Amino acid sequence: MDASQRLNTTSGTRSIADASVKLYGHEVRSVDRAASLLMALGDWQGEAGVAELARSLGLHKSTASRLLATLRERGLVQQDEGSGKYRLGLAVVRLGSQAERTLDLLSIAMPELESVARSVKETTTLGVLDGNSVAAIAWSDASGRGHDQSLRNMPLHATAPGKVLLSNRPEREIIRLSKIGFTPYTPRTIVRVDLLLQEIARVRTRGFATSFGEHQLAVNAVAVPVFDSRGSVVAALEIRASGNRIQPSRVPELVAGMRDAAAVITESIGGVAGALAN
Image 1 (cartoon, one colour):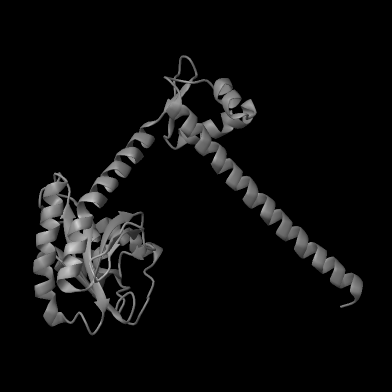
Image 2 (cartoon, rainbow, N blue to C red; image 1 turned 45 degrees about the vertical axis):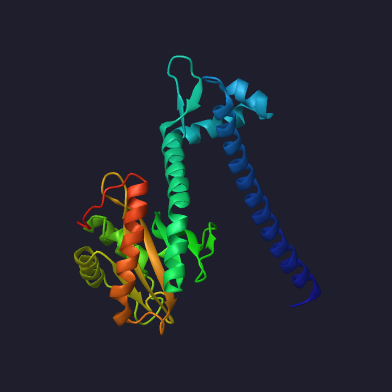
């Protein structure tokens, strides 16, 4: 390749990179503007028109109109048919309610997470359903020191909290997830939907879930459910440790203490202990 060809290749690569950066920047700017519109509507007294919102945020009217149309499709804003003005949508209310429940759950569960961790001298986590994965919204180290930072999301099919959360979902939901694909994290990961359905059936029967090297080969875990006011599983309380520290023979002892803690959390959030049923 001569110098001119190398220059052309380099220029082409740079152009593609520049275009990608510009596209990314545009997407981020659009998200920021949409978020600003939602915040402005939240602060507005009553409804607001496109021109008012655009003026208050320094946007072109056409830009504000386009973003509001997208937000309306998602249910985040509603438009009055008569006046054409906008207000916050029901989706925002649902998100706010979910956030409030999560915050309440977090503050109530933390002392129990810490207490269980101190008792068994192992790490504890509190996991909730987050789309197609488990979000650990709080955890305590083995010394009983709690942390309210979220950990990285974990798969539903290969973790003890994930199996607990799946146990309260209909079979068709598990089949839907199987069509997306179950990642084989270790040789012990359950990747066949029929075997996972059998495992979830065992979780429902026993009232707890285990994961022995299924997500991380050297990590074992046990989890029990926390219920909401409808008797549905709202979270999973987990104990996790290296494989040599949680052997099958230790599971009954761990489950007994976890169930007591989960019952306290369930009662404190106004929940009702339910059955893990399909």
